Amino acid sequence: MRLIGRLSFAMALGALGAAALTSLWHTEALLVASCEPETIGSCFSWRLPTIFVGPLVVTALVWLALRATGADRALPAALLGAIATAGAVGLYEAFQPRWTPPPGWLAACLGAAGFAVGVLLGVVRLPMAVQAGAAAVLLLVPTAAFPLLHKATRRAERAQAFAQLGVPLMVAEVDGYRVTAALTDRSDRRLSVWMAKGESSLSIVVVPLPGGFSPPAHCGPTIDDLYGDRPAGGPPAVLSCRAVGPDHWVRTEREDQVHLVRRNDALVYVDPGADVPVADVATAAAHLTEVTADRLAELAVR
Image (tube, rainbow, N blue to C red; front, top):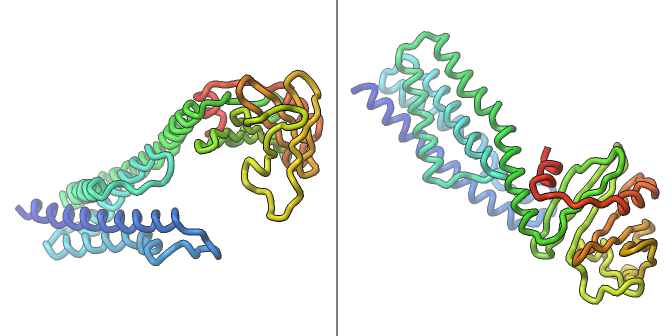
């Protein structure tokens, strides 16, 4: 009966603590998502340090409750419970594309289950070597599994977003360059792919063919216009371009030579970044290759 009582205390405190901390996490995440920072850290509230310190407080409360009920190994039990709960939360996060707090009910279940495991392993008179081995397993298995599971989750989420975009998924075959990132903007159906070779980088932007596209007089919006980066009062956008090949044009934007390539009902921009030789940009524009959503996700998420 004493073991049942100790389990009940630990599970109740673990559940309440996990639910309370998750509620703070949800509120903080909503605050940060809706905040426009004026200074570094201005979007964070008192909840953030509380979320980090909270697990230590919950662990201490479980330890005190176990000691109050006469448990001999209260401290190992509380620590094992905290480790088990942290591992369970880590495995949950591994299946989320971004750090997202679990639902309150799930957090409570994980907290209760984690501290139940801790009490069973800590309070029951197992050899210390067995308890140490259990702690290592509870800590190391989620830690080792997290990066693999999280990468697979991100790839799957990214592949789904690419597949739903409705534009060709383009990369360039340029010697030495590799994809470093790829992002989508569903509101504009825009795909942005960044490729780099050492300090050199370029971007490939794919959008649906702009309305009124009629080169060389009107070749669609500039890169700045696509991303809304044109400064107020700046010079008017240069919409014209000149042909350099079939369905292939160039124009000067921000003193850089941007290549534009038409692919069926899409327009592909090849935009040079810092320290990119002009020849590499031209080669990229001439060697655009369409890939599958899964392949692009694999290239972008490493």
